[in-house]
Image 1 (cartoon, one colour):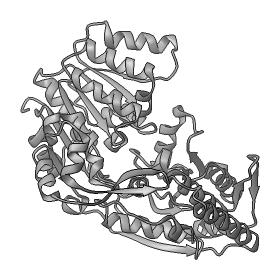
Image 2: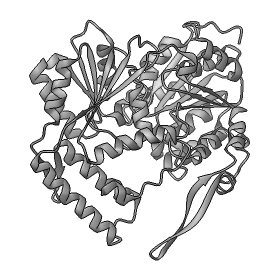
Image 3: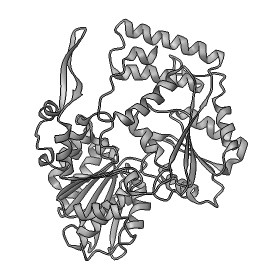
Image 4: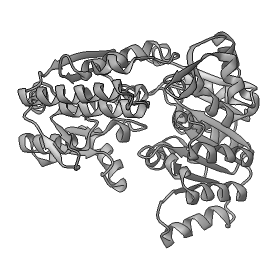
Length: 482
């Protein structure tokens, strides 16, 4: 590794992670958001290439993040002495993209070939085949799975396809700041991608039996095994330590504190009526045994949450809006604070309404939206404009499932949650878009909630999950909906 010349000087914790892992066949960078795990992975690629151990890299990252690898991370951190051919996955079969792929697969190149794909592409036969073809043609390679919790579901197609890449790879890395978001069982698929030797289990059920307490449950005609606790976690941690590096911001960076506050917005009379009706309907379904799956429970919670935000879809798919004070409260917050502001909202309708109201109040140049309908080619430009303190773009209105991963938004020191997801990982990731390397101010997080509704329960659950991330939270559905 001595031959490798850094383009950007690593922090001490990054240097240690790189020294510990750079030539390991498999390794996990469990580095908290904002501590620079992408740089460690890029320097690993560079060091391995400089030592003539690899000539190709496949990077798999969630949609909305993988562009940042191409346009941000690789140009910023990879040594200028390494010539690269970087190709970004395209879902279309355009001729220009096919031509780029041919350079990766068929043409000789005296440099480092880098293929960057979004994780979702590995769910499709075409995306999986592209990854297989690239690795088969370039067997001196490294495969990097960014935000590896995206493959924690072992039954998902993308997980199965990514697992098959293991046999075509020479070096493997997984990157995530939160390897366990709900249960230690999340670790199995992530570590199995690295190597069967990592945890030394060939079967998920053997792994589960070793580290989980399971009880048989019966619900009507159906019986199933339920995890009710965990055991031998010290042993599991020792195994992880042998092939991973855990980095927390509080241990390595002098980042400013996070500060949290709430803004309470009572339901309007119209909202309150609809909320009670929806809650009664959900509880009726539950008591009748119709609400049998977790997904259907979450659907009911989502509908209640939509009502709190001032809208809901009726049975015919028509959007019904209610008089509510949430948008006014947001505008009041934006009037009170100085500088740039990140606003996260779960629902597309809310993002569109927020953007319109902000444009009306502060002007069209002050607002940009970043969600599923934002064109891919515009996303990086939005981030760059927002990071430019001289640019008039002041309000970043985003969907945390889309914009909450991989991008840096440290120009803001106020983050407003117009609504919350009940997914811990999404909350943690979206929080740390502003609270990471480059932030020099305290970051204030404002949660807009309606009292005595699921808003409060979701926020409470998120806070509890931060402390109980290694346990399955067994909230009873009725307690959520009551």
